[in-house]
Image 1 (spheres, helix red, strand yellow):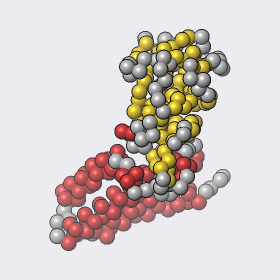
Image 2 (cartoon, helix red, strand yellow; image 1 turned 45 degrees about the vertical axis):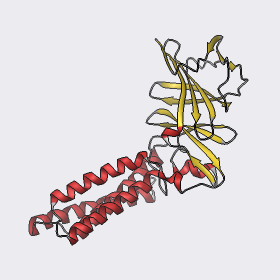
Image 3 (cartoon, helix red, strand yellow; image 1 turned 90 degrees about the horizontal axis):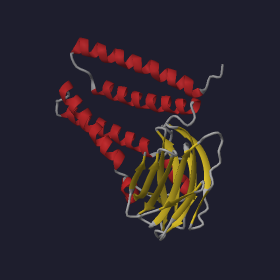
Image 4 (cartoon, one colour; image 1 turned 120 degrees about the vertical axis):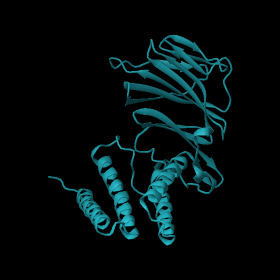
Length: 283
């Protein structure tokens, strides 16, 4: 049996958490209240248990877990959440308002704060990375990476999250590399052909003005699709599995301007791109 250090750590943290729960139960039953020290101990133990369990799962199930150890986007937010929550408990203790209703209310407010922070990529205001790889690692996208497409001033990283292909664009500034927020990636064109099981997506990095294209096709009988366009784009072929099954994606860089009279040739089919139409569905 291959027993890793993480397995032992996970077991010890679980036992310690059970002991803390018993201590909380006894304090509540005997004294009618729970000490601040015990609550903080339980919270810290719970956070470490979740981190170790997530890391362990990621080790045994590569590509399935979104959790990553170290200083990452999600872990920084969990740390800030813990600090804010503990400070709130300390203030309530000082004001002698450490009642269950106040603790629950504060926990709900902190959870809302954590959810809001998950959509606010405030790091871009004060953090730059010396390499693109460091930015990918911080945002937790290098583990499930499908492809990297290089532009002039940016790199588009395609990765799997919740069994769906997502995009992050990392761009270069004078201070180093930064990662785009959700609002800084604009979908210029999206065409889904359900009859032929293919999708064409063109994305723009609004910071650098660069355009990237992905053509995703359902994999059938190991068929290799023939693809080209009027821009002589160099497409890279990548295979991956999402919630719809096995897929093949052809990804490329289009430049900094929308190509005029742009046409894609996919397996003999001529597809003209109208930039005035953003969402097309063929059923």
